[in-house]
Image (cartoon, rainbow, N blue to C red):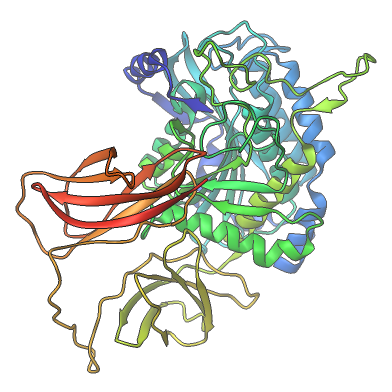
Length: 578
């Protein structure tokens, strides 16, 4: 998991970035053609068709095996160092041995599924840690309905590291970061390859994450340049640990050695009308409605405000930068903030201590594990259910909406005439406040108080939602449907969302008409008026949003102000609750 704490890393990233990816190819042309939609679905139809959600969801829950996940991690540990620049010749250790093993595992799953899974490498040239050529490992499960547009990607990075960024000789087992994510991807390829899904699903292990998200960046740019229609990217990074470190990155765990085995965090960029947050909300809803009642241990799925933990980054970011909806799964607790340059850093992340477990009784067998295989399996289920429902669900819809003094009218735009829809209403949190189900494309409901946003999804005959539409902030109209001319202030400062919040909050303000100004800024102060933070702004007409990250273990009431050319345009209070 990439850290951006040290000057050394900033220098390293700038050096690597000067050597951008070239000669990017899929080593298996068939895999590429499937992702582009150039294939015969009949060639990949299973002998036993499992396509209904009532069959798929239980099969995911029962099929995901903690023992399988453990076996993958034990094997990954044997490669000792999976640094991006590590040896590619040995069959026993280094990055080459690791990536060939993952490819072989995909090939074995392909054979077990009757050839339905198509393995490949994404090969690209770039100087990273002294190594000039690199390979992501991926496998493609072809969709069986070519009219169902979109490709779903489940991915994790396989590379590991110790304290020194390009150390290719240390014991970089990287079990939490990120053997756990790699194991999850392999297990989902195994279980999901038995299903007859409408849309194509890709399972991928990337390299170069620790040095600058390079493997993900290569695939994101490859997909964009080729026209591969990625509609959902599910990134898994540090997804199997449950023990809190001393220096966990905000907004992680509350105290050293505390345990959280029933919560997973979903990070994504943006707030209002963000396709990335909408993807996170889709994932959470699918778990709650399709899997929760069948799960022996219920999981709390928490949608976070920020794109990643404070000062950190992951493989979902390059996909977002290329215009694809992308998010990140991360454990509730992490063992360290990866600030390995600090003399007081004693946690496991980004060190040679990130191994699988310890032998406490001296019998030569690990018996106390740092990765919790049952927790990892539950997170694997959440991924699998969301990806499968996205792969069999209907096409998305669009919408428009207006509001009157007492009601909201939504016009759902559905060229496919599904005839069943869900309308979602959200106000000051990252989650939906209300959900409505309707058979009408024209739907109205009582107007909520305050600021709110509306989105929608189509629903198929099996009760599965599409990926969610854009969000709209409905304008006000009169009884005849005409826009109401309101005497609005030039700028309106809105209540931060969520409030109280996690490690970060969105501060929003509406610019109702073009402004001429020299300097605009946001300022946060304590109740004594001391300025704690400020940021210059570029004002644009419409909704403006600023992410403020206060970190963890901060509590109290604070004020935030919008200031334009020295004039205070609004002041509101917010609550720090953790």
